[in-house]
Image 1 (cartoon, helix red, strand yellow):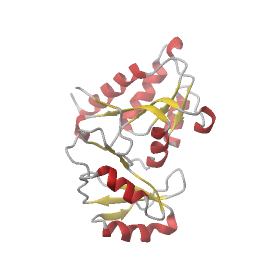
Image 2 (image 1 turned 180 degrees about the vertical axis):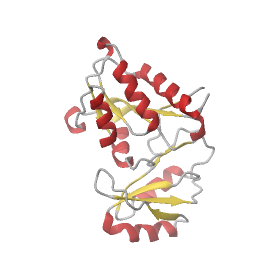
Image 3 (image 1 turned 120 degrees about the horizontal axis):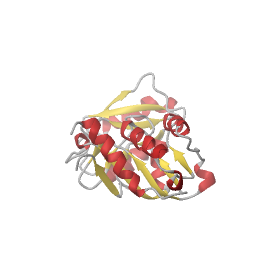
Length: 213
C-alpha cells in the first residue's frame, strides 16, 4: 500500500470515532484532508454539527464540505480531536508543526477528551527528533529563542517567509535526540518568547491509527 493510500486508509478508519450531531476538533495536514473529505461524505443522519479547526487551511476545507466552523470558546470541551503527525513514537508521543499550526493544534488537543492521531507508516519512529522540531515564537524574540535552543543542543533554522495563523514565526530545530520528550517540551515552552513547541508529549495521542495496519 502506498503512503498516500495509507493516509487515506487511516483517515477513513478515524471516521468510526465520529458521533452524529457532535462538534469535533479537526487538525491540519495531508492525512487530515482525507478525513475532512470523509466527513463531507457522511450520510445526513450521521453528519456532525460543526468543527473547531486548527488552521485557516482546514477551515476552508471544512466549509467546502458544508461543515460549520465553530469557535472553541463557544463550544467548550470537545469529545474528539483528529489530527496527523510528523513523527510518532511507541508511546504515542508526537512531533507536529510541519504545517505551522502547532499552537492551535495543541490547544484543541488539550480541550478534547480523546485525541486520535492518523498517520502513515513513515511517521513511526523509535526515538523522536529526526524530523525538525517546530517552535512558534514571538517575532521580536526569534534570535533570543534561537540562542537558547542552541544551548540545548539543537540547530534552529528560521522558517523564512512563513507566518503562522497567530501572526508569529517558526524556528525548526534540527539534530535533537529527544530521549525525554515530556521534559524537553516543558523546558522549551518555558523559554521567554516561545508561544508553543511541536512536542505533543505531556498530552500524547490517545489512539494512533496507522494506515494499512
